[in-house]
Image (cartoon, rainbow, N blue to C red):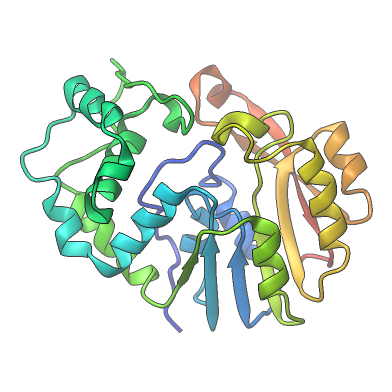
Length: 262
């Protein structure tokens, strides 16, 4: 088996699991099929051992297009960054360019550039980030290296762009493991308007109660989360967020599952 191991995600993502990924992987049971209905930066996928079948899904079309281009058009995507600079002017040009007017490869380059240069990796209404204390996240000299590493991990992955409920229904089998990473409670609109809401948590809990496979669900530790998902097992974990002052303090999250983790 190919071991992705300590591979990093090529992108930054609001609410990404870079600090919790290893702990989540250690709790995974044996499985045949692995699926992430809300893949985001897919940190857990990049940290785990390769499964026989792997599916990544996200409703964000630009994110899915980037992963597809890394998988299928690696050299052409890398070429897009020749002669680029990390500059507010370039950021503004990409922001003013409708994604629908670009080819898939150009669109992937636009999304990656905005993702790596935006403050806090914001998905909704990103702004150009400048810090006096650290270099930019976008290292133009390492793009080929970072994309090539991700390309190796994505070589057998099936990539979807569908609503999470449809993917869970379609992929569910007794030997399926879902890693589920929805928007945080009270942060439902951080990834766009009308994509996810409080009622989706209720619908998700009801759907997970009926699946044949197993799941690990990660969320912030709130009273609402504990009430909606009370039928399942909870494990408390500690992590740090990577935006502004919140990165300086530990916060509580929960890993929710329908099985007893290892």
